[in-house]
Length: 579
Image (cartoon, rainbow, N blue to C red; front, side, top):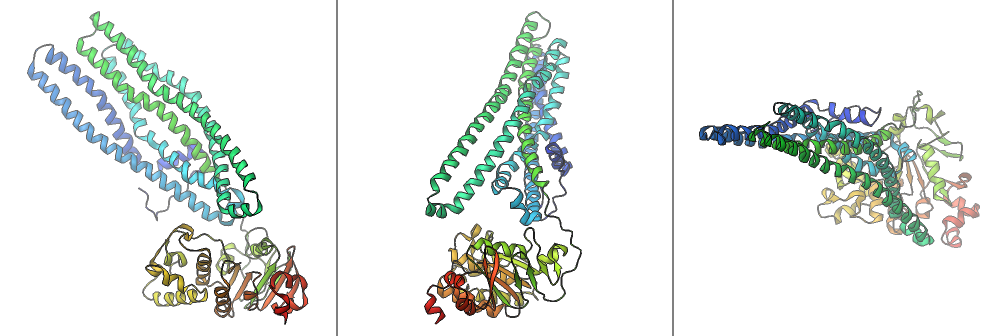
């Protein structure tokens, strides 16, 4: 099975069938073993009626107890050996499915990481969740055909060969079953793929709406819009349910065929064999063997139908994964080197100019305006920003990411212990060498102090080793914000662009963070978006933006005195602050 740290390989993105084939070829020996074990297992199932026929004809019919004991003993041995083979087959196919599952997860997660900021602009969060939760499982289930599927074909041919020794007419009837199955199941498979694809698409839309509701419920309540969104969710869920009924209708037909066709086989072939036994064309032992062969055929025929059902759903899921894998990150055609020394970062669209080595604050009536400026300065989207006289888009993206960090106050926090949450990279406390650990511990202590987060560590049961839920849900909003700031400070970027880093903090904690942040980042380029006077007081330069454009620049005190709009926005009591 694929190792957690192993390279999953380069997936085949040419289509759903190609992707499923790639998953098989990535584990060729295991797939071959599954097919071999499945084939031998099913053939030995077909051998059971043959041994029973020998026991009847050569033992019971001739009153030969020695022959009866011999064939009965062989029957027990073959049955026991086949039971052991069944265990091996099941274990092998479980590994095949789990490998396909984990490999697909790694491929999808790796590609999502490569897409980076381009991912949410090209696909909804609900679509990604649907792929991760449902489609990956469907793909893994589709690989069941490698073992039982191949084994069913081999067993079908083996039983036909055994029947040929009994009656040509019965063999022809059995062989005609395959075209009949294809004729009945083929249209249903195509219909299943269409209905399943539409169902998955609508499921992605509904999942995205659930995520939007969960994250914005408080705002919706305040605006009185909860009812409108609830009505939209109700309509979407109703359409999804109706589409689910359509999928269920097709599925029920396929499952009915899986039970009905084998039963029809059993009835027709057994009736013909009984007539032939009465007429003396075949012996009683051969009649028993024919009944056994047909009973054995029930399983391969059921597998054929289930094969079509699983493959139909698996191909739909694989196509959705492939569509995600075909998304490309924003082109990086930069060839110009980044400035060798700390340089001015300038956004011509807003007029924001960030001098090196200083703490700069961006203030806007709408938080989205300042956040958009930060996205342009950090090259998260189309931008004309210039860094040291060179356009950001002309600099290779890895160089930009290595030196400019955008720290969002709602950035994701992954599950794990607190030490790993704040220092996920080597050298920052996790996986560091013995020489690196003291320096890493010092940096960690400094970052925790700068973000006024020591009390968080002290309050946890085992400090930095305490487990954190996904998104650190076991912490308060203010604590999560400080943990995000600790993580950003530990990265120690040349340019730190922090979006609302203290918006969820109380006044006392915010004052501590503002003072310590200014001290910790002294001589380093730092940009914060905020309207808090406690943080603005420590800024070297403040840009006041209206409709995304700089209308005034100066210190916090200068803007309070000279810019009424700024004063109205940030001062809780303008008379008291100015005086």
